[in-house]
Length: 431
Ligand SMILES: Cc1cc2nc3c(=O)[nH]c(=O)nc-3n(C[C@H](O)[C@H](O)[C@H](O)COP(=O)(O)OP(=O)(O)OC[C@H]3O[C@@H](n4cnc5c(N)ncnc54)[C@H](O)[C@@H]3O)c2cc1C
Image (cartoon, rainbow, N blue to C red; front, top):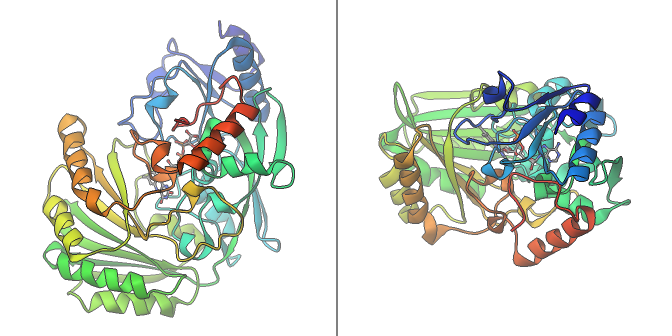
């Protein structure tokens, strides 16, 4: 049945009959056994147009996917459209704007920005796509001073439900732009996007590693340092179990005024004796490497939560569940945004009200690891502080954890207008 589509594509149509199907059907996160009906590896935007037009005519569903870091089973039965070949990068440093193909990863943008004094909004890995990140909320090292990835989205070229490709912005369709800033792939396939770039004249990045035995006092100092930190300083804390030992680790980043980062680190240094203490000035390309997330596909399961205050009780609970090696490999605490004055209106999911986001990761597959993560999530319930960006959801999460009922109703109205036949499927469907 898909033969007619294959005929008009310049890129590949991969189906379960193809020898590399098992490899192609999966996204970066191998723990998600996503089962699309076919995958279109688009060679250019016109392949996306053909695919959407074909799907619309045959009552099929289309799911955009770049790297597959956000793979979920919502994509089962769809035609997944891979955008890697849409890799154009155009930068206007004077206007502080980048225009990017939908397959471009943050690492490539950051490398192109080396020497310009500007940065994009990369998160913990340069391997994540800008399109996936910005359409799903996106929380960066630089979101405290500059807002979320979604709030940085100026305009998008989309293939709409009729298969037509066009640019939209806040002037031409403010509602659809609002929905794209966090609602993911439920509204169309983005083939290119325009984002803000931000001043980063002197990026500094730091990593302090303490023996896990000092975690209680280090996390207490981290809580104080985050409350006092200047808006441009971002601090993440970890409890992590590595082959050579268990650590409480603090990473820090600032796009300018390295002395503000130093001030925050000095509060934390005083709380213990670091076994490793590195502070370095970075080019934009070095930002995504601070966390050393492997680029090749991995199998990982995670849970996420938010909270407002890192209290002694909460630190105790973190140490109870993650203080010694277990099925949980690491827990990360990310200090969220400093202010709500984002450059332009985002969506609720792009503007978490909570002070901190927590992620717990297991590298072990199977029901025991899932049960351990879920038990930990239940233990965190008393501190849970509500909405988070959909880039922070685990594979079994729901957009209900990201939006207020009023915002969900608005998203549904926009979906009904732009995609009445429900052709487009995001990794988190509208409930
Ligand atoms: C190791 C790791 C580190 C991460 N670090 C961070 C971080 O620091 N901060 C953060 O906010 N998130 C982070 N994430 C989450 C990540 O940002 C999301 O998964 C995000 O969706 C982008 O990843 P991706 O490009 O691989 O997306 P994909 O899995 O390819 O896409 C995710 C969804 O984005 C939408 N989408 C993608 N491309 C398009 C398109 N062309 N048109 C329309 N919709 C599209 C679709 O809904 C799609 O299902 C991380 C994830 C992992 C696995």
